[in-house]
Image (cartoon, rainbow, N blue to C red; front, side):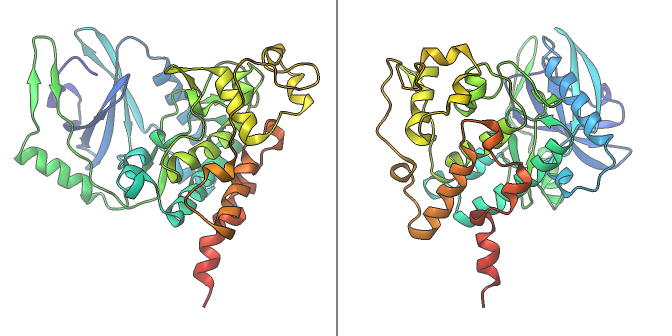
Length: 360
């Protein structure tokens, strides 16, 4: 978080009124642009490392340079401006972004059993896929798709004006220390709008990449096994995210004694997806740690006795069949076997709500 109070005069042309929230490497402020007379989110980053900030800025510039009328562009929150602030511990990179509502993690937690309804899940996934379709056509891989990085849009800016007014009238509590001020975040009200994909700090531009990316339990098999990866890891994340949003828990636990464990993660994948094809095993020598030359599991971690049918508990009949068919289309060992975002957009489960609405 920034080690200073952001005074009105510290940011020419802008006023900061309230901290919507904090991340591990940044703090978010609600900010009014005095010339443009609109509210923005000001993301103030720690002074130690500007790599993710620079990357988010570069990706935003790349996406804005594309002359496209793709509707998925509206599903992405890009950097609108950036500048630096001087603090006691160095320079802080700052990004200006459009203000949004709750993360889908917090939004989901407001529902019974902390799970979205089927209809809201279907609509959410379609719009997220719309954003990913534009992103992937622009040769950008997000690498960190999860409910924490998808936020509710806000069609009515009055919701943020009310936060601004409340902060003027009843300033939120704060603790003043010798070197910094700790602010209490004001609760974010529910907004009404489309889901928006945020945080491009770990995104990559280009077709094929290597290296460790993705949050722990969301990692695709090619990332775990240190293989080359591409935009299909974002598609994998959508499949894993379905469970987080709809089933009230993780699809993959991937832990032993409270620590992330690759062997456990892969064993759970085998239990839900079946064994990997030989063409997958031939792409990385690390595969020999878990499979022999015939493709049989040889790791010490036992394969759990489970299936997608035993794990899915909210739907029955045709509804469950359609949902699990979608999940199986996505959770494939080989990236080339996973559909692209455009193909998934018209999946039978995702268009089900449209077909039902059309019935007399």
